[in-house]
Amino acid sequence: MTGKQSHTILITGAAGGVGQAAVVAAIERGYNVVALDLAEERLKTLAHDLPADRILTIAVDVSDEDSVQEAVARGVDRFGSIDACLNNAGIGAPMKSITELGTEEVLKVININTLGAFHVMKHVLRHMIPRRQGAVVNTGSILGNRGVPNYGAYCASKAAVHALTQVAALEAAEHGVRVNAIAPGLIDTPMNDVFHAAVSPTDPDSTRRGLEAKIPVHRYATSHEIATVALALVSDDMSYVTGEILDVDGALSTSF
Image 1 (cartoon, rainbow, N blue to C red):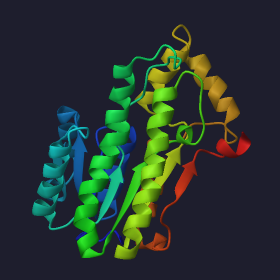
Image 2 (cartoon, rainbow, N blue to C red):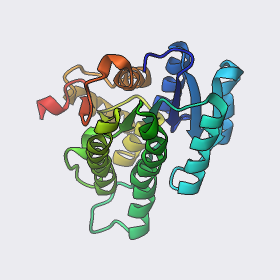
Image 3 (cartoon, helix red, strand yellow):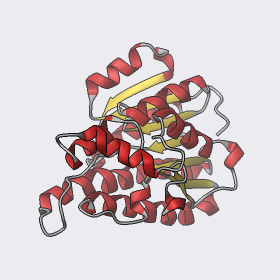
């Protein structure tokens, strides 16, 4: 995608930190935006200061396939096409060992992080493949590449996103459609604030400081930094890049 105004990007998890940053950055680059999230009020707040003719907000639970299919259809009806997708919706997980995790706890994470990503890919690819045009970026995680004690549900959900990304890339390549994933490390978002508190309820700041010390660049990413990498991957400048899982983590993975 070149980012011309006639091009449209669908962004899920649009009311969250990275999602909001991606919506704003996409509008700045000339995209029309179909913004999906379950948090309807936060979507409205996000859209308030953006051009009304350039953004369509839809409250969607990505674990509900029918809702996703309808949202994709509404986006196409409004803007004529969906040329790019940032498949970003996701949640954290309980900090529990595998022996303590309940099935319902695991399913909740899988339903949003994995099935949600699958539903969105399925229906945007059904639109893109016949047109022989489009690019999808899924939001994975560096924790989809390696295990972390007591975070099994999340690691498993993101590992599955990485696998689905590679399968979709292989299936879509001959049709001129690209599928990649970003694997962020630690980001300055509310989700990580919850993670810090789960690790150390009495001193969450100490958890953050300890993690920052392990990152070679010694800081968390901003939401904007992650969003702009995703937007770069859907641009025509990356036309030969597909099937990749790109770590965006300040060299944290390299240091392991």
